[in-house]
Amino acid sequence: MKTPRSRALLAIPVLALLLSGCAQEPAPDAAAPAPLHDDPFAHVHGIGVLPGDPDILVATHAGVYRVDSAGKAEGPLGGEDFDAMGFTVAGATLFASGHPGAATSPELGAPNLGIVRSVDGGATWEPVARTGVEDFHVLTGGPDGSLFGIGSSSPGVQASSDAGTTWTAGAELAAADLAVGGSDELYAATEDGLQVSVDGAATFAPVPDAPLLFQIAAGADGTLVGAGVDGLLWRAQEGGGWASGERFSGALQTLAVGEGGSMLLVDDRGLVRIDASGVEVIRPAG
Image (tube, rainbow, N blue to C red; front, top):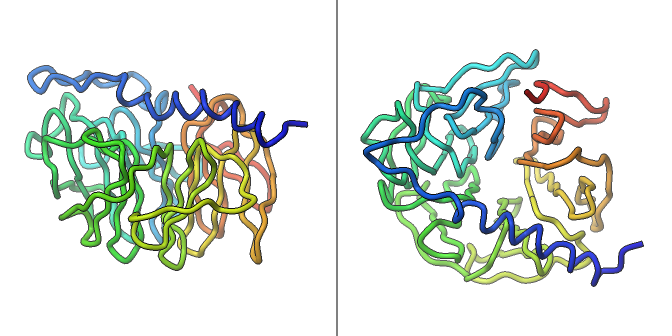
């Protein structure tokens, strides 16, 4: 049985790899954008769902794709093949960040996208802020217009209250992942344990008795889930405490909360949904 100390020691290399992964990947030259990947689903950065829409949105190295319940993929949405290093669905709006691809519209920015968004389910994309300057490799938002991220210009958390138009510096926190929860809570998965902010990322405090997580995700209904360094998926319980459930398989690329509090994730099996009825591989890997 792992002690809290041994779990923390295990978390350090895992989180360090996640935190440094984007920095190790050089920004593409604006004059020579990266080619399209043969299999865009080989490297997934984020997933999410739009309210009332059964399809799953998958942010990849070659754009954002829509996947239906049968596993059929459509994309890249809007014809934009950008490398979506950061991605989140906030209300009915898609936000992304990263680097342009071979067919990305020049107005979205190069060598970094800054913040781009779509208000029509990905049919069209528009630049919002930090165009050409910032690469947010961690991005999360809420339906009230709040947006939080960790970008290439600073290791600290950055915050926006106007859907990404203007940004302010928050706490300097080395977080592997962020998630907006209910009641104005912002959660951060760090090597020191799960942290929470209730003042818009200005300060953070430890979440007592939380498992050591390297990914965290929240749903509009208040559902809070995470992926632990112990290889387990965790869910916060009403009234306090956490319950562990399924193991993820191999390398977990991304995690999200779907409709009805289901878990959506991408691991070595492919695109997976876990709910009360069991585990469903929607789109197999490869």
